Length: 193
Image (cartoon, rainbow, N blue to C red):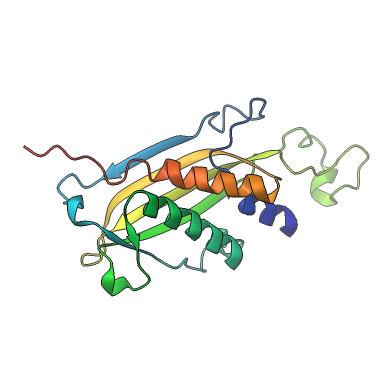
């Protein structure tokens, strides 16, 4: 099971769209990005961004390996740099802090819920098999935090389906695409009077 969780998180394919998918009512068929930001904040002075370390206290982050965190940080770094931002290591040098987290949720398999034996002994009854879902719901949140006030000034949330099992090359492509998609609206264009 832990191998499956690592495969899910390593995939990080929040942008991957595959036609046939189960639980379409529960999980959006196309990735959706929602953003919110402080309209009075001046983003024009933001040039240097420090990506903050992941807190290891939440269950969702305990399941992510250090290597996976590093690869996600790298995808965000490459995207920020391609957009003209400098990613700095020291918080003292940063104009903003980038904080991210990833939450995954497997859809419930309802086809075996009629069998009480599934709850007593996994795979004990004939025909009951615990199969991992092909897709899971993934939510990737990126926030830009003001380093002086420690307030989130911009937030993007990307929700999509994540393929449970995929190869390293596809995982890299999907991480890069997710970073590009989630940062597409940063900095926001603010029309001031």
